[in-house]
Length: 254
Image (cartoon, rainbow, N blue to C red):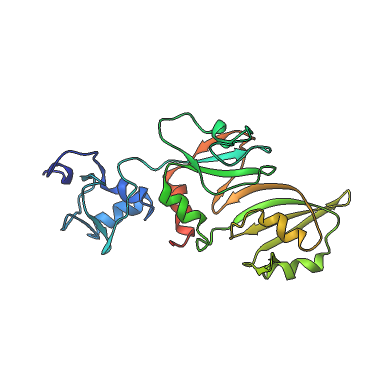
């Protein structure tokens, strides 16, 4: 049996289930189930044979009646990076400050950060070569929760937190609801766990400053299902396909 990619000019061929998984539609095992149950069509023909190879750039692939959006011939790469404090979330800084590019793994693929994390904040930052994945996660409608450890100057009244959770107001605009968990007071400081879905620049600083409290520390420790865990500042790890697919399943496609 000829593989689909052997029907025309040769390109980069990959196993069909791998292409489906990399597109974020399902896990590798889930992709195999889609193939075995006849839900995958390549160039107009149903494919039920595992291991069938396709060219993501040339072959027309449909899954459950919908055209598969692939990331091309390059495999999707996503890293979880623990961004240190005093590091800019850009590839280049005209002021000469330390940038996250100095903490990327040294590979041939072009990598870039997904979203931002304040210069004086630290914690989890995703790094990828996949523009579609990045756009999907940072789009305002993605609804992926991001969790932060926050330290405030002063003791914030606990009765204020339920009001803020309904949607903080700053810069003349009411924003999406948030989740706030009080942790403790220490040395006239307030420690909170805060979860956001929006990605407004300086969101945490602005929402608390609007209530009269200055943020002194921000550390992001979770994005969707991805946690910072044991990563130390400046360290990174590559995410598995299963983790990436689960993360995408938590988001709503723009």
